[in-house]
Length: 444
Ligand SMILES: Cc1cc2nc3c(=O)[nH]c(=O)nc-3n(C[C@H](O)[C@H](O)[C@H](O)COP(=O)(O)O)c2cc1C
Image (cartoon, rainbow, N blue to C red):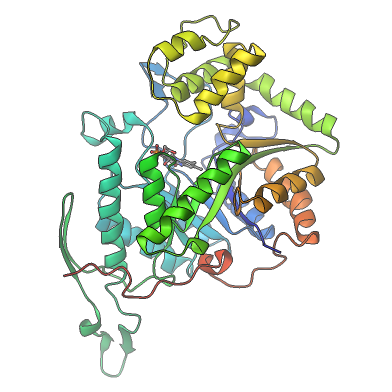
């Protein structure tokens, strides 16, 4: 039987956008070390593959409106995970850093360091940055166009791999008597001049224990999908429709051989926000309680963002103006099309749609008992929609503990999830090989 993979997607406060308002969350403590340590230790208790932290490079401001009613965005992912590396032993640590607003040498250094510090537990969620406003914080007038962003990402990743592979596995000699720390003949610098970057030199540290951090990707556009086929070993996906998820996973796998890659070496983890109760009724009441905590301004903002259409001046209790939205001529994602069809069919108000989008931050959600959730997870994996899930607790820490204490044992009893870690590195948990030391070296 195929074993699932599990990650926890951390978020200040919780994944339900109003989760931070729950009575058990101490809003002023969500930036502290204990908050992240608690999440990572709970994940390790539950034998999770990984802990994941995102990275947003702009505050919540759009069209001159500051959105102050949601909890904060993520703080620096690598700093958080470097800190929790010391409080954990096995769980993988996946940090997010942008290829649009960084330089390859610095990022290669930081991930190599995290991998060394943690004994081979680092992963890199390679993003090109979702929010346009980030450009203004980085001395640019506008966000780079998407195709260009992904081209830059390819070159960026090639350079990082080449830097990591610059040190042969036997380069460290550590001969005290002779006074030789490493053999320079086994360290190969690069001399790269490309479309976006020029890098000449070698990293200041040996090849990371995993060779490369596990390469993770989270973009769903056609350019994102091609990039994933080329580099991703793990994809964080967000489809909430099973058929769409099956198609997406198959589409990436189908493209991998074209890039000389084995499709078996890709794991797709779908975002999943569970709302659990000991009965279905109890779970539905919990969902209702959370949705009542949602500030209407947050719903309208998230809906406007997702639809690429400003809804601020429409009456909130009125219908979603699908005719106006369609007439605006935007290029709508399947998720937006699906929402507009549903709004027309079920006569949903703007506020209702805001709740739908904001509640799970557009990922999949499940409301019910732990047993029913396990059935749901098994069905999605069996049908090829994913290889596991990125669990998005509605709020931290209670809801994470609930999943670990009540859902993981059922998964284990049913043979769907590991009872113990078998290896020490993130690649071991995911069944991914360590890349050969020459695999990423760029031609000189
Ligand atoms: C689970 C998940 C996590 C993501 N985390 C981030 C993040 O931390 N920062 C970010 O800028 N974008 C993040 N994204 C957005 C993607 O990187 C990407 O920009 C977005 O999905 C749009 O895809 P596209 O650029 O291929 O169209 C995330 C997406 C998913 C599905």
